[in-house]
Image (tube, rainbow, N blue to C red; front, top):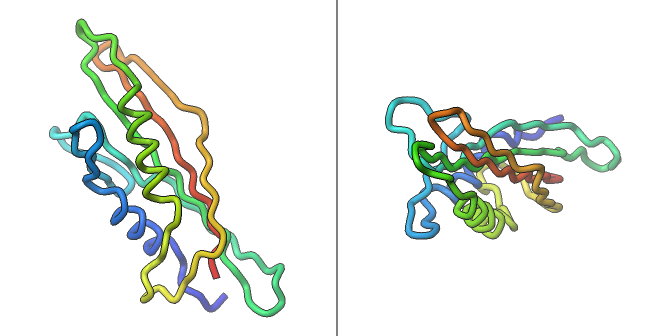
Length: 144
C-alpha cells in the first residue's frame, strides 16, 4: 500500500485532543506508551497498543483499518483510603467526548471516514500500597 502508516498521526491527533485536560479540577497528562520515573501523576492517560490492517475490499484504493487503545489510570495510596473510581469515569467521559471526531494532520495524507469508540471492561486492583482504577477507550477507524 502506498499510504502513510497511521500510527504517529493518530497518536498526535489524540495527544493534541486530550493532553493536560482538566477534569474535576485536576490536570490530566497524556503519555505515549508508558510513564516512568518517580514523579508519576495520580491520574493520567496512556496511548497504549495500536494495530493496523490493510483493507483491500475496495478495488479503487486500499484503506487502513486502524485501532488504538487508551488506558486511563487513577492511582490512590491505599493507607486509610478506600479509593473511588469516579474521577476515572469522568476522565473517560471527557476523553470520549474529545476524541469522538478525530481529524488527522493534513501532512499525513490520510483521512478518517469511519470512526467507532468502544469501552472494554474496566479494571481495579489493590497492590497493598495503592488502589488503581483503569478504564479503557478503544478507537477504531477506517482511514483512506
